[in-house]
Image 1 (tube, rainbow, N blue to C red):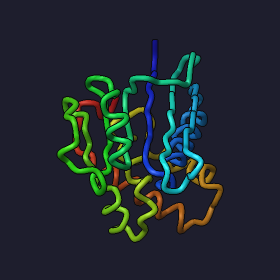
Image 2 (cartoon, rainbow, N blue to C red):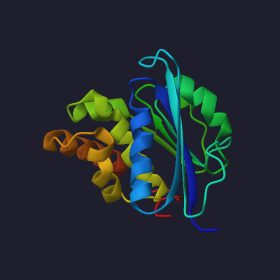
Image 3 (cartoon, rainbow, N blue to C red):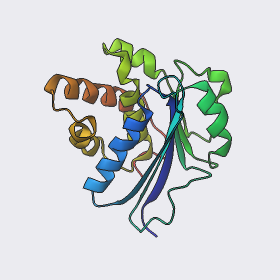
Image 4 (cartoon, one colour):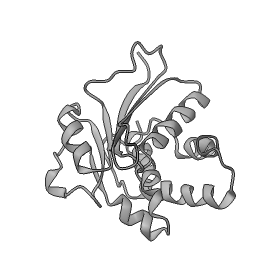
Length: 188
């Protein structure tokens, strides 16, 4: 069948979850893969709920809808409560433990990556980069795309080419990747 993966990225509006999905979609398209990207957000946007689903495959994708995802990127507790029960057994979940208590995490046979993304972004000098921290962690944990492929498309997704902003986001992604450790799923 070839390469196939999917991810649901979820959090509050304003946390950059839709941007993470865009970056993944751009990188996969640039690599020549088939991609679907489906954003979902409330009318209140900033502060409301937001999530998106990204499907990446070597084959044609039949539907952008994913009921039981292979992976999750979770930025807040309501998103964890909604999507964690749907994660496939053995799936990978990247969870922002700056906001989500460790006690709420369901172990998924080495596939759970608790990462204090907000704290890490603050240490890097910009709390808005927590989304880039979790993106770097997902890339490392799944091995679906290379971090350099993600970094290459970032200016396109941001709509900016300010070198300082791009480099700061690259550092955030690298910090997230470095925070993953060794997962059984890494390097797929």
